[in-house]
Length: 121
Image 1 (spheres, rainbow, N blue to C red):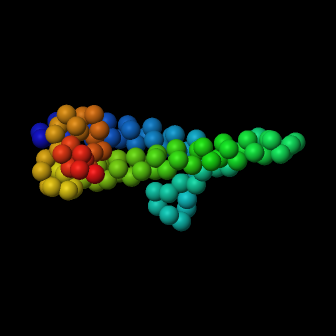
Image 2 (cartoon, rainbow, N blue to C red; image 1 turned 180 degrees about the vertical axis):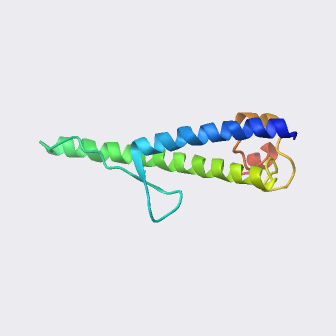
């Protein structure tokens, strides 16, 4: 893959990273003890007037947990791809070591595997 294509994908990854971090910050706070980990904020709808209001807070919290996890995984994949660009290993499948198709990287620049290996999962 040529350098200009890698630079464009790097820019895309950096933009995606910024978006994911903003989304995470809107629902969670960084865990100061574990790098790359976020803790979902428990919503506070005000003073609990009834058990129903408390139940709504718990339901909102529970529905946010999987979103936080998915965003953390995406952020980890983006950071991994940026590290691979820096080390010169970007675009290589982690399973078979063959090049990942450029079209796949254009759609999902943080991809870790080629399409063939992804289908094997």
